[in-house]
Image (cartoon, rainbow over all chains, first blue to last red; front, side, top):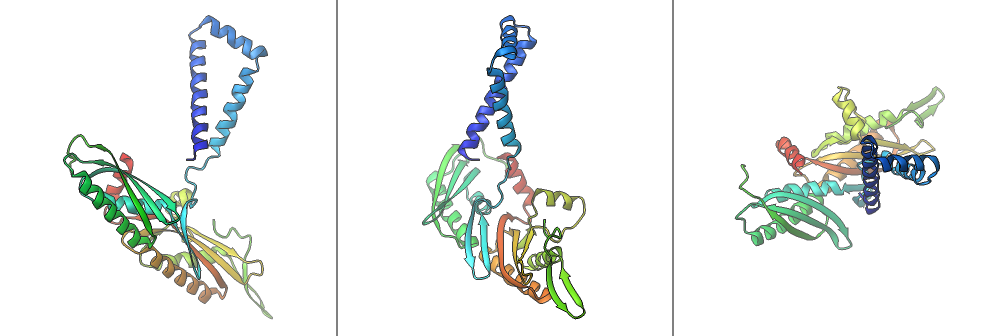
Amino acid sequence: MSVGNRVLLRVFAFLVFLGAIWAGLLLADVGPVIDATRYAVLEGVALSVYIAVLFAVAFRFLAFRVTPRSAHAFVRDTGGGEIRIAHSTVRELARRAAMQVRGVERLQTRIQEDPAGLVAYLNVRATPGADLNAMSEQLQQTVSEAVRGATSLAVSAVHVHVTGIASQEPAR
Amino acid sequence: MAGSGALQAEVGSGDMGTTQIANEVIAVIAGLAATDVRGVADMSGGVVGGITERLGRKNLAKGVKVDVSPDERQCSIDLAIIAEYGYRIPEIAMEIQDGVKRAIEGMTGLEVTAVNVSILGIAFRSEEQDEGKDKARQ
């Protein structure tokens, strides 16, 4: 989801929130709100602007495609056509490899394209008692080998970000 | 989806009449050739394709898009596949390109100008349920 869409979603949520509160106050028979509503309906521009914006944003998200398919992909041209490896594929590969490293409890992966090759970002929640340095080195090695081995893409960097420690040893 | 009947490839026109091949047929040939390659777990037909497949209708042309050139002699194929974990993707892709090209050229006589392969996902064979749980937790 791009930044613009995120902002739009915020705006949408905020407007709906506002509308809901307003409706709640109306239902609760709060005097000033009823007066203000009457005023807005009769001669205010605010209400029509509110509805117009709400409508526009809602329409934008109704037409929103949840998965922009093959939008992000690593493309390579062989003689007989293109090979496109979707970012999601690389992400799944990286995830799979990383989950096998000792000490990884939970994981989020993100892939970016770089002139020098692909860059993987791993957000890791570690198990308690794990050696974080050894774990991240192991992660970098395992992930870059797995991705390079499966896709032949150049892996320029694997960034490991330890975001937290699990509260207890998971039952495996 | 593939071949809604708009453009059809005409592969032969002699004294006896013409031969036309529907895009759907080319798509099925391509789909079969691609799923024959080791390392291809499935074709990726998107959400709608998945639903119709659940309903029991096996769609052999799933994940295949066929473009026939205006002169109806050449075609290019777009394939969307799910690869199997543990295989080298470029090798799978090149094998698919080879196999699909050979199958279509052999069966229809059309010239295949390009076979574009998109790898949209990875399938893990035995531990699929585990994987599903992991995703649900995220």
